[in-house]
Amino acid sequence: MANRILVKRSKVFVTDNVRAVFPHLAETDRFGKYSIDVDVLNDPALRQTIDEQAAGFLAQAQQELGVSDQPTNALFRQGEYKDEAFERVSFKMNATRKVKGTEVEQAPVVVDAKKAPVTELVYGGSLVKVAYFFQFTKTPNGCFLSPKLKAVQVIEHVGPGGDTTTDTSFFGEEEGFESSGAPVEPTAPPAPTAAPSQDFDF
Figure 1 (spheres, one colour):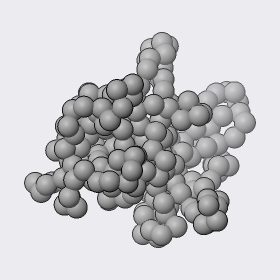
Figure 2 (figure 1 turned 180 degrees about the horizontal axis):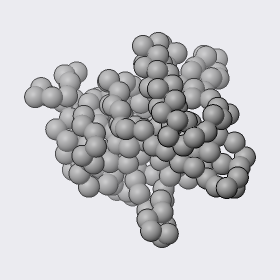
Figure 3 (figure 1 turned 180 degrees about the vertical axis):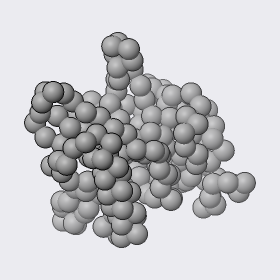
């Protein structure tokens, strides 16, 4: 019993429009994960929202799993980049998952403002919405509460030179970024074309 691994997932949440930092959506990062960071140092409202969501889910997970252990990892990462302080939250997705004992590949769904699949590479500075959930994991070595990446909607696409390919309107019935259907770099793998799961909506 002591060696069991307990896992509980929250419902899916969606951020407001945020700027992507170091997105790895078409291919994995150096740790073998799909990921996207979001700044919270200059967005205290987002930080508070994530804190409150995490705290509420943690209490629920502890009650349902019958544990009282506290997570040993931090939700937010602090540091300095190019002489500027930062505080970010990182949403991550493993490149594989187990389905009935078999490892299968997975990747985040990436769509444009009209929910059409995005094939262009998404660069830092792009305006996005992030669909995410929290995962509470209890292992023999400790407990962890991690924000997991589910999907990304690109509202304003920023290219490698910092150029935008859309205006500044937002998701809904208004105008926004629409994928051209052609990858920016021919060698870049396209984002998955599957429709977003029905357990969240942008």
